[in-house]
Length: 155
Image (cartoon, one colour):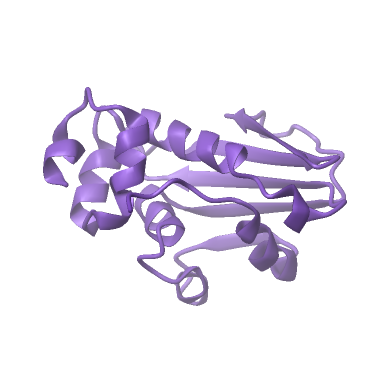
C-alpha cells in the first residue's frame, strides 16, 4: 500500500479503495500529504454516490463533518444534505449557513480518525466515548445516519 500512499499523482479513487488496507501511519502520510485534500474530496463524493435512500426513508437531514488536522492545522468541512430521497454534497459550506433539514448533526474529528472509522479499522463509538470524536446534535440519529453511506473498498 505504501507505494500508492506516497504517490501524489495516484488516482484518488484508487487511493480511497486501498484505505482499509493501509496502516494508521500510511493513512496519516496520505491525508497529510499533497494528495490528502483530493482523497478526502473523493471519499465524500463516494459517500454521496453510495447514499442509500431506502434506509433514509423520508428523512430530511444535514450531516456536517469538520475534519481537523489538515496542513497548518486547518479544518476541512463537508456537508451531506438529504432531501426527498436525494443526497447532495457541499464542500466548505458557510459556517453560518442555515439548513432546512428536520435533523442536523455535526461530527468533528481529525482526518485520520475519520478515515479509520469509515474503513472499519476503529470503532466510532469507542472514539466518541474517549472524546476523540465530537458529535453535536441528535446522538441516536447520528448512529443511524452513518449506515446510509459507504465507500468503495478493494476486494
